[in-house]
Length: 638
Ligand SMILES: *[C@@H]1O[C@H](CO)[C@@H](O)[C@H](O)[C@H]1NC(C)=O
Ligand SMILES: *[C@@H]1O[C@H](CO)[C@@H](O)[C@H](O)[C@H]1NC(C)=O
Image (cartoon, rainbow, N blue to C red; front, side, top):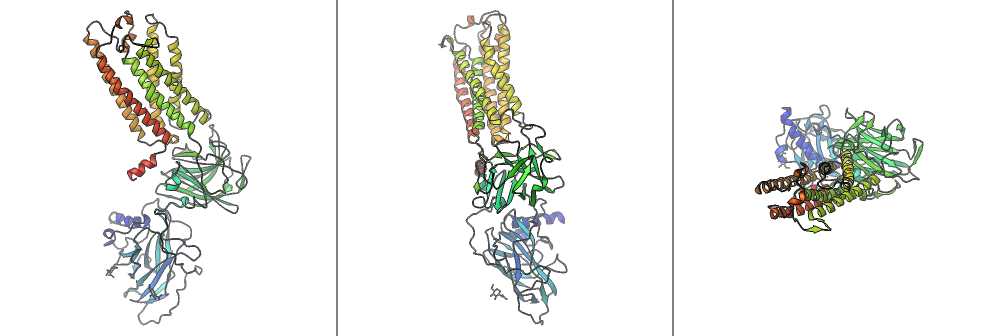
């Protein structure tokens, strides 16, 4: 029974919350009590705990059996709040689970009657458009005597709704009772309420309702979110908003993707460390708490709550809805943390926003796995608008250089050295064999790009950067070291034909290939660095590159084997491993002409070269244009 009812209930409330109209298929024939608590079954959707900005009034406090009265739902005068969606019923006072009476006349375009327990006992919205006050005509049942009240769940937006918006008591009396036709009087202890204002019934220009935190980012609040340009669209991974009224500084933070914590920090620079952080943390018991903490740059303990006074912030509101963790709080205009005075009125601060999905320990938030961004410049918190993030130029150049080096240049350099020693034999470039000349050009390009990329990231990260659990930095630095040593080794290589040449060949081959593989692995890891803001499907592009690369190597190796076999005992050193076996025959002897299938090999190179360069270019574009995830999601309709 419960299981059967659940989807219906959820559908009804879900319909209310996502502000799509009821579908008759779910509302008709819903079992008695299906809409009884006017609440979603979904645990993470919680109503606002604040007093609702709506009220319900009736045209009279008494109604005879079978007679009708007018019910109006709206917001109090002076503070007009539009209604997005709602679900309204009359309930018995004695038995609040029982829905009574029916609605006989409702504003037809905006609302419609529906059935929860008995025909037409519920009224709800037809469209998610913003609505002003609404009036309905309700008919009292003929088989009931006693007190009823109108009760509603009203949603302002998907994320913001209030449960239990109630009317004053209405008494259903016998048909012969004399009715005093005065406005309903509140019989409960609630104080007198202002009558609803009738708002203009024009829907706002914004077609989609944004979460509360985004409202006012254009004109009343200072907002800062990640990724770039997410605020207009309302789809930030993490966002902080500051609203200033007098000397009251109200902060809001929100993180998406079911974060464990979302935190904002006031910083004197654009780097993590020595910042006063404010953490909105979803604890294991489901309760959301607010803490302040102090951050340490790249050293233990990284972040410490006990180094920061906790009473400088006061939590006003918190929620976790649809994987969105939200906190609203005030912070003292002036506070001192770690001996540093934070004067929000007179000083400018960089805003930082971070979110992550875990804790280091119960007292310390974990690595910012979901979002991390710092505003590009210090801001007066009383300013209004959307702040720009810190420049990503160095980071992006680092990415582009490394991709160009390890996907592009080194792939070409390696393939030339491995399979093309016996191609273009006799032709030279700058006094060297063609394969060697180009091998050296590509490898020097790799080396220069890698060193430049490495220096850039050192400047950007101001030294060693903690990439959390991501081994990008570790594999990266090994790649850089191997890459750095390669040309030095090559410079001191023993002359061909000497005994020690074989050791050079092996080390050079091993170090070069290890660096190449590690370099590509490091690029794979970069996809998972949230700093890079790369779409997850970059992995597929990289995987396609690797697949192509491997297939081409296989084909070229096969060609080399066939080529070797085809000339019998006079084997040609198309495959460098032969070199490494240390044959007594000097290589020059073989170099009287191109090895067999050279034409085919040149064709393969003609395919491999452009395709690899295209792959490299594609990934360079992804890095340079990141973040493009939202664009992609929009295209996919997500
Ligand atoms: C109820 O509303 C209707 C129109 O919606 C109006 O004609 C009628 O006078 C109202 N009745 C009372 C008692 O206010
Ligand atoms: C319920 O409302 C619909 C549409 O407003 C109407 O056609 C129908 O007769 C009503 N049913 C009852 C039992 O009042």
